[in-house]
Length: 600
Image (cartoon, rainbow, N blue to C red; front, side, top):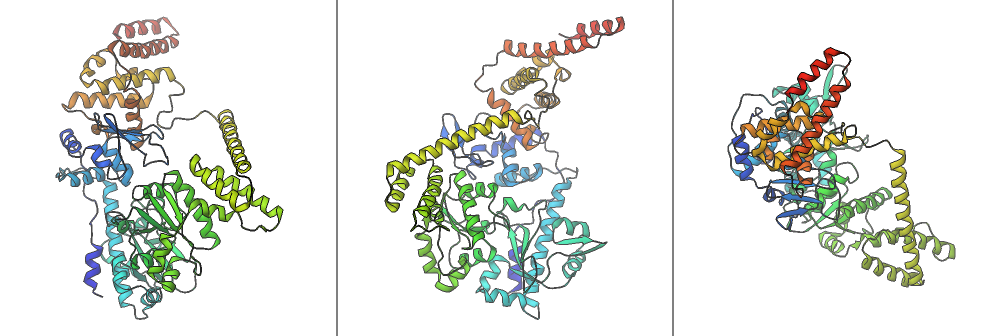
């Protein structure tokens, strides 16, 4: 093994760094022109043409029916299901978990544009860049330790698991020895600061001392889709707990949003993914010739990971361990993947507890047969219905069928449900009509229960609080008028002067809408080419979603000057009434008269 090989490999990308940039309106406009939102989004989701626009299943929440619309005229997107929305910059920020500057740089790189420089500092980008540098250096240190360790503990472990040298290099595997501060001292010698090491998650600080997090462990670097090392997993060698230790969430790493080895699996030509349970399972499967394999990072599958998987595969073969915990995790994964319209199949590894052991016992060819003959998720759930029951008895058979009815009632497709009803009826020698009737009763019962719970939730829970614009519930009429005025300006940016002749930001009742109106008017007055992207640096992702939602919900409403004048009158009336409420003396009355004189 050549040390230079891994150094080159681990230096794939330097990450995003540098100063924060006060981007000009012209640059943002050129950036948007060079990155059409449909062209960017189709790299992440499947777009379906619908009239002048596109629709897709929203990548930010689980759904089976597309509720996200991509508007080509305004170069924006909005999900009517979860409220996510914005421009192409907002989309990249959310889908890649980047801040504003990082999203700009990624889009500029994609389009071959040069990012203008500016002296204003950007702390978040610097912190993330430093963490990526620390992780890269730590990975190189762990690999060097793997090679140079006199005891060869790490190499012996990987060899015992059947890993070839080229596999160790491919994944950048390493070793953390039993020292308390060897990595810490090494990184400090490279001019990193102690607080940076703690923020990166490779070190801990306690009782005034900074020391290594990973000790006496086989090390697995975790990479993002662009090849940046964002975290680590460490497997204890010998006795000790925890068996696996993972980097905690950091500014560059979120366990619930990443998948181990997706950086390799995304390049697979297959339209299906193998979902394994741990690092060694993934590496063993990959080494056996299956590059379309990923694993969660120390947790059960999350909704975010399920949505991420749906962007790369239409079918998932679940290859979890055959123990109780693995089977429970399989059931959860089936439900989450079903929610994002991904078909699931299950492999039954008889004679082995996990894929790694199966491949070492029976070889890659047998494992491929296992994949090709994997069973569907419904059959997996039907088999589970038999657990703990004696089917030779009437009591056991009836209990099993009761469980089966619940499983069948969860199948939404009528044709598919009828196929399984017929299959079960034949297997258990019961009437298909009776079984179908029981399933339909269960479906009806579930619907009634959901309606009852929904109504109970409405009655017992406090009124929904709008986190973005909390004043909406207090001023519903005025907030609707404000949104109408904002939508009018987004549709008719050339009318900003007319609107400002009639109303000022001070007439706005809700603080959030007032901020939108203020920024929008400033941008419209200063920019010759206005786009939603010019608002991206002023508002958060969720706020951009709300602004896009205001625009989307008014697209089919013909906002005439008369309609907008009515909206303006609502805000004037509110302010006049509020002023009237404060009249306590003749002096107050004179002040009110002067104010009203200035209101057009």
